[in-house]
Length: 449
Image 1: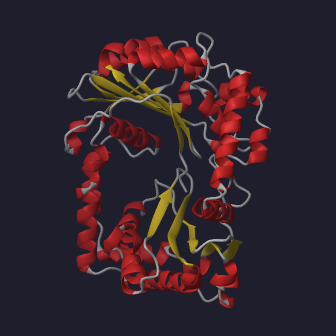
Image 2: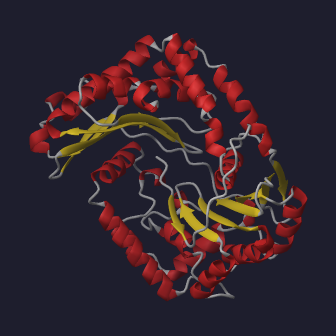
């Protein structure tokens, strides 16, 4: 479900950290006078600092019919402020040897910067400018719209992308969650400067943002510097609006005809939001079902035993207020029906039988053991801590995670499989040469899955 679109402005080498224990992150939190939430993690291995900002300005805040507005707004942040042109911003980044990238997802827009510690003051000044004083020049709007439309048209030729768009639209009809973050070619054409300025002035406010600072800077120094640099950034309305409650679409089969040798298939249904209390048991269960790569049941059954697909995986993708469950795979057109049947069969087996002790132990060992690898660079730590704060997981989450995963039992796996795997609600999308695929009649109505 998650579709973060990122634009990188300049490049610099990533700052790698040694494999760390979770406790070394030592995150601390503060809220500035303008409402900006700040999370810091001092890492003194190298004289560099990474800043990662999440702000509630994602695509779900767009007015209906203006899809793509949030994405274009995020892309244009670095293309002109009241004090600098796009060229001057680029020259400043080159001079500092810094990276600056922006992105947009369904819930949030993001800005990330990495630079040397000695240049932190200059970097913060630039960051504050793009967040509080972007000007959205018309010529840059025109260039970015053309670039986005070209990207949309190119991705329309990607059968996997087409399948994903159709699946999300069927899963969350009549909801912003069911719309593409990039928008459509027609909706992006309608994006205009007044609309961008209105969106920017309404949603790019410090009291709806989280800024994480990771690197060679102490908590107090970071707070002092940020307080000074971001003082002109004024807070907005107390709330960005009520929490969305998207209703899931009905089970269905969607067939898209394309001249392909491989069928691209997605099947799935509604999942759970990130803060759901069963989230961790679901992750363990899904690792066994299809999230564990070559050790998963779907891979063993569909690829290893039957040779139907090179890769197949499943995932529960959570957002703040919604989530999805998906099984994705590619197979020959002629074997599409068989691959779907086997995937549905494995889902039913998981519901009926749960996991073995060996599968449970392997899943927990992997999830716990791989956790530090998610935090081996400053950039990863900054992005991780921003997400931790956004989802309200608590700054002690890195320490609690192994304990939570270890506590998952076979009974938990069986319980969440029976509750959150729902074969009777599957939405199936097949992008294929439909004449060769020849999907069987029961699939056309969703019956027999």
